[in-house]
Image (cartoon, rainbow, N blue to C red; front, side, top):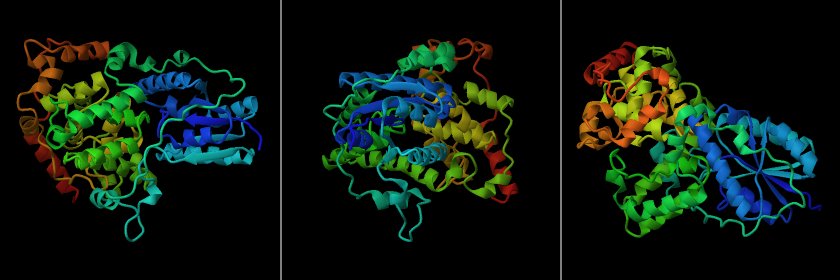
Length: 472
């Protein structure tokens, strides 16, 4: 067998440890050429996730450099780029980690067939999941449509130990040319907010590992209570790192089980959250329509507003609804690229139920603003909140954002952190919002805080009336 190079195509697996494709490539006894391709799927990403992806790619390049390797950067159609690299380097194989969203699967299926037709070995490996979607089935052989039975099914499954990073990565005799990531300008769409958003990012494999260790040591013991308090640092924050594969779910899983075995009972809820993430990939794989259409088709006739130009939609996006919990959460997302999970439920419920706006409006806005954006998790979360998805919150469950604030932010720490108009001495985080937003929004920190565009009680009644008129 010739010693032709193996191209290791990185995508959403931007780490060196617990990386099945990279481990296999390094063990094959061939030179390994790591590659990242800025293709049409990368180009279509929203402003915040694209910027955050660029930071992760740059960090991976540094990590590979520390191993005596390189990350080759190319821009263009993935198949065309790979064919050009194969011709230039004499590579005989391409390895990559599988992805499970419909767009990536369509690209990868076409690409694998084309490479094999070219006589090139194309090998895909387990991706950023604990359990591949086709490996988890109900007792009758179908896929899970409800989360809790899936959790019970996989809870005690054997999950193999995380793989160490390769001791070395065999280098080719010569390296192909590479783009400069600075030329890609992956932060361009962030405009003046790029520096502020960057300051809130925790980037790379080393940082992700430290974040997990700190969470297990300091916060997992009180996770059940604190995870619902947006004014408290009670969550792991790992969704950002899991999104880009800077840490593997397998590593998180074993750390959670170790904490549970050490007597930290709340760690089980952390493990459940990892499986909730798995549930999103499971559904997107088996029912791809969840990412673009109502999962429950009877919702197709529901008269949601789809006009993004509506005054209510603009107020929701700008954090100017007059509902403090909603506005604090929306501003947190705009500044940091993340949003507390309790906030995500509140803002989604308010948009789809109080404002009767289509969940796709929220899905698209989150896709532009979240640094932890994931097509599967984002779609499942929005459809769960709207009531149109599998295992969704019932249509008649309309979160009251006022009483929710009283319950989960009693001292208004979260509100004070993010809404400048609600205090005489605004916090630095609240003021930073005005350095992030587009100038044409015309907002200032000394504006009067608005009255509710739709009060909580009126919005609830309007939503329930709409549901009942449609026979829900």
